[in-house]
Image 1 (cartoon, rainbow, N blue to C red):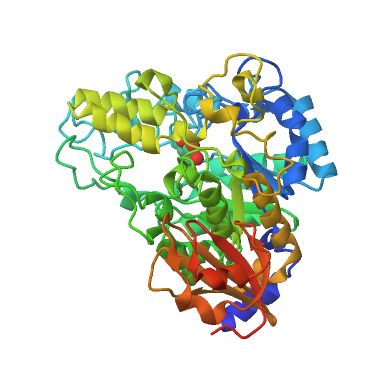
Image 2: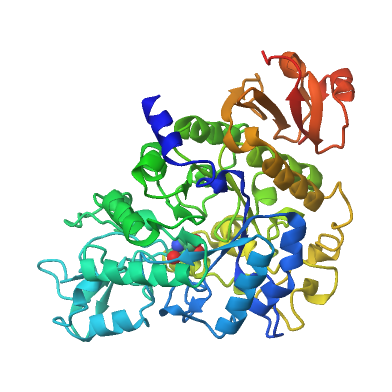
Length: 581
Ligand code: NOJ
């Protein structure tokens, strides 16, 4: 209690402006192509700013546009202060920032500082000799004792990388291995080195001084590693294992985040910081986002997007009824008043939300809007991933050649080498691969979905002939119309931005109902996250009041009460007139 009061008094509502904000993520190569080369770019984004204004969002998070060899679609940066010609130049960038600001939209940049590209000048210097001053800016280690560099099992640890294979690559010239938790072209930076940290902070200040409004920090909870670099438990197939206990949420993470805050953000206002944190626990998320500790404004946690993972993300486990709501509730309860969460169901690394958590066939519109309602009205800051606001579905990839993503392609290649069941692997990639979210945004029903005049870098979803933004703008009942309402609601309502969260139980776990409360204001959200009709009577005592929003277009509660059941994916938002039971 004391801590809550303290946190609230330290930061005013003004400083926490992002509580009533909605963020929109742009993945530039798939958003809109302005120069006709089949790849999205800054000019394309500029042309589509009216779409963002129409939707009403407050912040754009822009995935990387920095110079990059594009081994991991821009998450491998070779110049933090340059713009890749693929996306445009600084004139385009400055124009975009001004245009967004004129429309009261802030711009948050992606910050990828757990690793660089192996083509970054820092790494080129670092690898040039063992006594180069920048050698210590990366993780260099000798081969395992008793092993010859290059031979199987000689890597300093047996960790498996996120993109398959070992996390270490031998540099023949200097005879040592370097660490890369992702691809070999993404060497990990050594945050233990104070000069490196100073350089990163100064680069961040440079962007803020240029007018950007904050950062989404890529895998920021991987920056502090266990210096002993212990081995993982091997998985018995590859001999490699999960090293995450030794590099996730490491011993100096909070020191680094607090130092970054002091060095970069102290004395500034109006910015937003969000840390992407795979494997973060509620305890760690609380430490990172407690305003009194001055580390980050909010985090991306990963539990709910791992619910359908089996042994790995491509080994699909069907979602248990109610599992999503249960997990989201756990995080709402866990962060309570002291921490702050990002509310998301999709991004450029996840399959499309309506295909994964909803029903993208029979109940496409209903499930897209029900999921959005259940998500946006929780406590936290909602994120809309490009295309989600029109209900875009998973891509159609009939053969492995149709995929572009390094994670999926590496996984397939390793599965092939290991003699795994390739049909099953392909199915896993089709369901959970990242390319599902990377197909071009569907602007209209024309060729290439209005994304580009040239054939796009990755296949357009054929359903763009009916599923596109143009078809939805003038229809208030469309997915787009519903998202616009949700954004608007958060802006208007203090209870959504600041209220407490309490789940309302229903014997059927597919019913995700909750109440929000703030200063005497109340809101009730009832959603049926399933394909079946569900009995409404257990909720009757909360069903009194006026309807604020309904994805089936109900203006009052009467038809619902008469029917006594919620239809598939029905979601209704009420302002209660009685004290909820
Ligand atoms: C997380 C990013 O979201 C993902 O796209 C990227 O591949 C990894 N971090 C490595 O930067």
